[in-house]
Structures are given as C-alpha cells and as structure tokens.
Image (cartoon, rainbow, N blue to C red; front, top):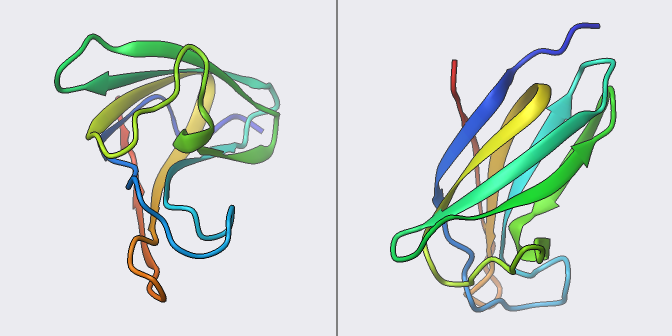
Length: 125
C-alpha cells in the first residue's frame, strides 16, 4: 500500500510539565508523538526541536517500521540532548515516507487528576 499522510509535520505547542503525581511510568507527565506508517517501507524520521531562547536541537533519529505505529515520548529523547522539562518547544518532523502524526499530552501535576490532550500535527504540503 502506498503511504498516506505527509513527509513533513510541525508541532508548535510542546511543553512537558516538570511535576507529576502517581505511579511511574503510567502517570508521568509527558508530550508524545504518535506516528502511523501505512507504507510498505520503513520510515526514517528526523526530528528537530525548537526553543524560544536557543538554537534548534537535533536531529533526533527515529524509525517507524512498515505498516506499523510508534509512540515516542519526548521525555525519552536523549540524543543529541534531553528535551528540557517545563520549557515551551516546537518541533519539525521529516520522514522518508508519508506518515500521519498525532501529538498527545498527559498532565498529571494535580494529584488524583489526569489531563489529556490529543491533536493532529500540522502537515506541510
């Protein structure tokens, strides 16, 4: 099957809360990308992160197997450097094959409360 989606995606509103409540890792606050690869080829992905007060960081190298999904927590990205908690960021994702990209946030700063947000990232035509 030919891949559906786009090869370049943008997320402008990232910010991983510093604090969390509850058991880890289920109730750790996070920002996450959900990547869907419907193509028959492996998607080689590069992610560049942008901050307000410094040069971009990246690329982070990722892979999504053919006809699979992959969820990637920004909290888990460490190479070339960890994502900074509590600081606004944005990112640009480029892929060797078309992908569909969703952005998720889980905020568990308030004990006993869980806030979730899901949006489709912005595809660049």
